[in-house]
Length: 77
Length: 340
Image 1 (cartoon, rainbow over the protein chains, first blue to last red):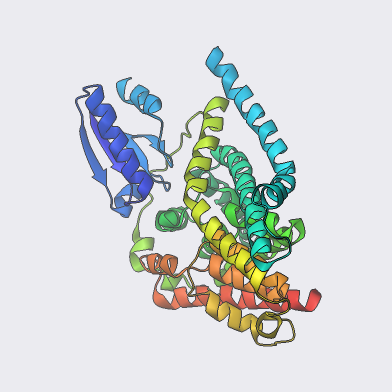
Image 2: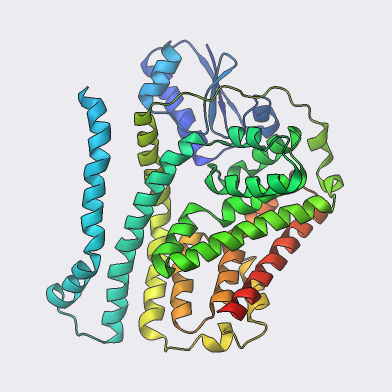
């Protein structure tokens, strides 16, 4: 699984990255996590509100940090 | 089943508690000052502390409730949806719509750049985009709640109305000036790659949870500024003689409006800290127009945001942007000094 965290370094973007790493580690998900900080690249996903999380090329959450449950559900299914 | 019902009864219980507390704040604060601490009535110190002990919980309670409600309402809005609503609208209608959406769309100054590019690349005119970017910080929910709590509903409505008017006309004027050449060249070279279409489907329980989250996030961040602002305001309330401010910020001083704006523009503070101080200054003879102009200059125009915007706007456009808003604010200041 390929996970991308989109966000140009705001506090919530860091929170989302931390949460994603936790969820991935806890559920032993086989995933590579990369942080995308370049605004132009972020815009290429068609979104404007950060932080966002992209799983295998698809935007799953944007503009907010999901709860642990929501994120776990989204990553496992 | 248990969990679902809890989502609904919990906010109702909290709301009742809120109402009881809010309507008895005056009694509680007087009881604390006069009975518990037994402070001497009428002294400068007592009256300053009384002011603080009453105003701080009042403002925090208002912030908590309204940010909760706004946090829920905002779950129906997003920059992506706003963009879709603005596409293909004729200019003045779009300026009005963009300013109104600027108030309710979730926005932080850190997302000003993606928002600017995202709007412009989908064909929304420059002036309309700027209407949004003027309204969003100027008429933000924290400012509006504080104005309501400390000045009353009339001043709050005046502020909202004039703030929106500046955003609408400011954006419209910049649009008429056709300054697209002063947008950084790479912005218009971008191709719109794909547009995010599906908005996530939320349950009402999720929206309530997001209301709680926004209270935690926003009140958690601004309470300290509110406390500092009200503490300074309390000092002004108790110790500074009445009419002291009239000689600097009064109506009769013709240059007070531009001076307040010139001081206010580079001064970077948030609404939470500045509004309680200004409310105390009004009590001491500062005029409404001058104070309004000062607050708008501080809240609506921030230096850090201008620096961020340099990534997409060339300097002449940033200066025009600042000049148009500054003139708008000065006009509002004189207008209200003349009216009230």
